[in-house]
Image (tube, rainbow, N blue to C red; front, side, top):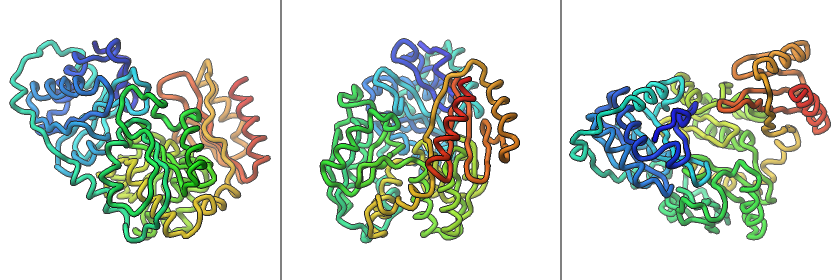
Length: 447
């Protein structure tokens, strides 16, 4: 089964086995090789229940089409990115449905240099070739070999911090029965911190909660546990562990843009004057912190394909998205969940103050709504209405959806890639102004 709708803007995702099954996985593996003609590639999988057979099918399809396939086994998605970059491979596929519920399967696909394959960079061509696959024969089994990327991966992520600078912090970690539970233990054994490890057993049935910390109901546990344990911070990972989310010592969730600001400051301390990428949704806290720290802030449209391309073009040291994706030049210019976790430990240790205190200047100066989603009947018409209504209030840009920058407030409204939704992110210099403008813009969107 291979439902064409499983091919999304940035990856492949579908319900197993009604939208995507082993036959579809085989076809995608074969279609990928027919499209990009890689000589050597890697394939790994997350802890999804369907993962072993789905990975085997992808590998067989790719190998039958003529590629040499390195079997990475059970890995987090960032480990595939690392393997492709570190081993100089021509590409790779991670069999993962990331943060989606348990019934899903999927794939994240990259080319040489760990560059993502998305809707605008070949994924639709892979789809078309996969849907046309009729030949399922070949001697691919002879071209599949296992490779252990774990030791090199652990060494690389550890290289981002000075372990001797870490204080004996108490940290609560929610792995959500995802890949972080497998990836973190060999990292944690090198750290002088005390950890409260929760749901570390990889289990694709997700018996405790869905592995999506962006949803408030999935954050309740890490917030409560951080307070209960009197921890210095809490960290929650998504299913394939390429994103992490932070809770401070007071139990308050840290928005992705505030985390980006802290991480950018840390990166610039090690790489003075570096360029830093951030997305159009972000708080003014991000560019203003980067500038104060001597860096060069560069705004970009949302999405890992666009961020990674811009990072290469600009030779940027770091990139951060509001959604919790953090990208590092020295990690195959790819996103990682483990590296920002390590950097945050270093930040809290070196600042010599509670994380809530380090965040206070941001929380007292920048008032953000977070992302507010609204279904609309006609996306293009609504965006045009917003543009016409606010053109006189500030500078309008079209980098990604509509952005309006006024003197003491700004917003971005962008369409969803997958459904008729508009996503609003708005910020103001005061709580009162933020709430007033939020309600005003939402009223216009919903009218």
